[in-house]
Length: 228
Image (tube, rainbow, N blue to C red; front, side, top):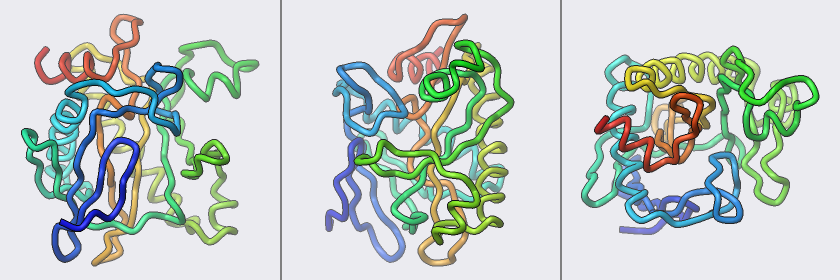
């Protein structure tokens, strides 16, 4: 298949008309050998991370599809660590949508003068621009509109869908006594219909989850969630 893009944690191949195949890698984002879902560099390689992340991604996308939420998911082959999805056009050069339930990570680094570590947040949604050179800066709804990246109406759709999706994910994790602190999602427009849909993956590699106040690594999380 034609290789379209080599990413940090997955490669993208052409799989047919309006379809692409994602090949999951064992690389995860972080810095100095420490995992960080918000980092814009590959921090470490964990054997089995690709298949593990895909198992969790498959579970959540099939759950979301069943509830009628638009996603790019078509099917997955866990043994091959591949997922077939609908082709999407990203907003601008790519956006990340973060939903936060507790003050940790970059939120705490920025606003630590006004909050404590782990302080509860009410599903706070923020959008960042995918730009490694500039450290993936956050951006407001007005700036997104003025720069021609996203209309105010589309911004409303993104934030509403994010809260709905993350609520479902949070509740699923809670069934295994796992608490979602924050999660990073990505959206795009269906290349064929133009509909806004959830894209990328939903795995331990793009969320922070704690159990009894202790952080759980991506592989530990996926094992606890799928096999616990």
